[in-house]
Length: 507
Image 1 (cartoon, helix red, strand yellow):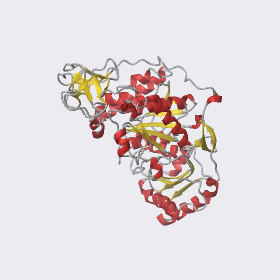
Image 2: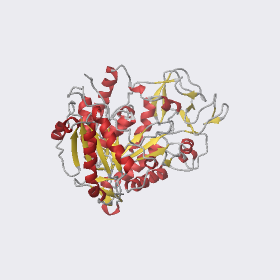
Image 3: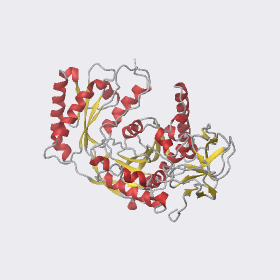
Image 4: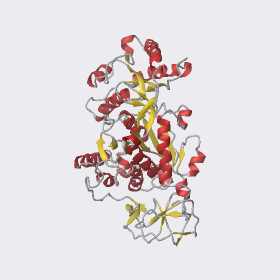
């Protein structure tokens, strides 16, 4: 690919569409045909006749069906390409096998914060977790105090993060949303990027702090405290008490050094957002290559966004290490079919406006590109939303495609680093976990250079390869895990991306 200069990319010999490397003018020769109209960068052009009702093929897979006869040279997009139900054959656990690991003596390390429970943090934050919207104001006031005043001589602390949300009360306790919220709170309280936690409740909410601590075996200690606003006497007293408690923690938190740690202590969240027609060609497969390298070094990669593997899940079921793992993945796909039907929606609603402007058309096309983030390793486990990730290697977590909700679940599962690929230019932060942004194309990378960490656009331009870009991502993962700052961290972004998945009736 590095020497390729053609204006188009044919991804598979079976494809009847190619992808424009750049904007193609009407009349320009592309793949042996003449472009019948202008083709925007990242969009598809027909390279063979496609009859009405016939599959449109990209990546060697059907991404939809032609809504009319499509002539060679035509722009293939929303006006002539429609969704079709995924009817791919599912083979279970046919190519999973054991994960191929490097000899232990050859595995890389990083510099991290070893926690008492054996987990390792890539950052040294203090977390304030609100039980309900009614304690959000107090939680943010405490975090704002330390933003304004800092930590004095204690320079080894990354900050105080207020994790607030609009949920926690007026909700039945057996609903999925309530279960997920408590699971998320427990997961964040245990995430190794937090050196200390303060839980702040209101007092009369459904989501009682005492019940949470009892049910998840959380207990108070030097670096774990709780405050209930109504019990302590109001907002001002709660703010002052939380500030005092955190101030007492600072010397011990500051004293924790970074030490060499094996990559088996890294749990990497694989995420894509603001995708475009290049995502499945450049940044996603490059991240997949980096994920394979991490896993071969003993680490864990967490793929997510169930609606964005729909139509490509057969690529994962084949790699499952057991039939049970494959069946659990398919059970989540079935749940999503039912969930969208119940709410009068469909899985093909997933591609956003920006996705479509960037060249994507159906969820089948988006999914085939999105699943490339998962590389080639066996699928070792499937988790429900925000469950603790206990297996190493490649695993999958059931989440929505909405990025803040998906990443919140991954962080609750224990992820201590994020790599986020984007074609349109996503800008989220996700404290307390650093987020490496990877651009799919050079134009966006340069236009949004204040938000991007790595550019994979050279793959399209013929100056880079998936392997070389993947190696750069892998090295950046180790550097950021060891303390190097991402672009978004340089601007102190990431306070507003804590978004637990809200499901169920509000009463």
